[in-house]
Image 1: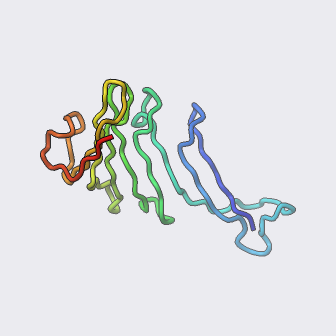
Image 2: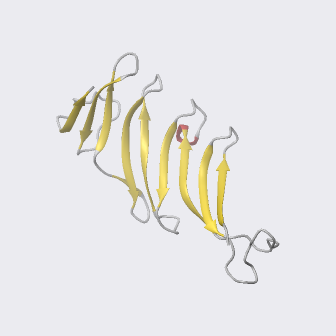
Image 3: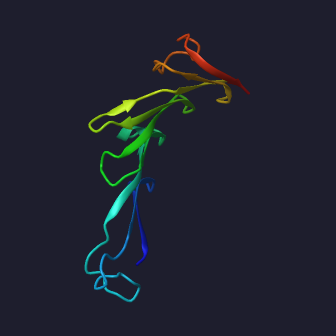
Length: 146
């Protein structure tokens, strides 16, 4: 028996999905290095990455999913938001509730200098409007100044 990892790439060579499994489920099909592969091992998705919201833009990661079970709906993840210059503006975590991705707090927003450096990090308990400034909501949980 061997540990098997399948890495799926998009047309630009970026990793978009990772699957893992163990080869062989019986002694007749043990998938050792000397055996023929007459059946493929069962693989389970462990992660998925979406670039540019599935479109063609600047190659930024806009969504990640981490799978914790064997089902297609067994995952948590995060949506990432960016400024027009490509600097990360915020992170919105979510979980799959069985049928839809449900966002939840804490929501993290970054206040940036004109150079794209983080000047403060703010977390909110309520879902922000990602185009607003970090201090507009008035529901600040914590502020870290750098």
